[in-house]
Image (cartoon, rainbow, N blue to C red; front, top):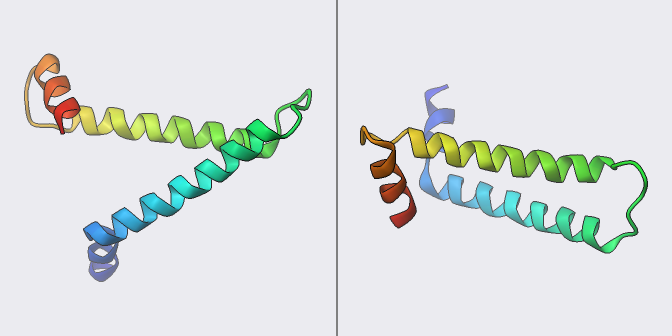
Amino acid sequence: MAKMRAFYSAPITKFWSWCIAFVIFLMLSSYVLLIETPVNPTNIEYATLAYIVVYTVEHIRKLFDQETPKLREKCRVFYTK
């Protein structure tokens, strides 16, 4: 279990998993934008929406995970990185 945690927390693994997920997101969102919009949302649209929601929640988690006590300082540090 420790080896798996070390593998998945390595910077290169995080980078490539983010890159692959982002390419998949780009492909899905391009497909959604290029096809004719059906009346009801498709599974691909739900997957794209889920990616956007999870990405937003991750950024909010990173914002509040910082050690600075004030929200204004957290935002300043978060957006200058």
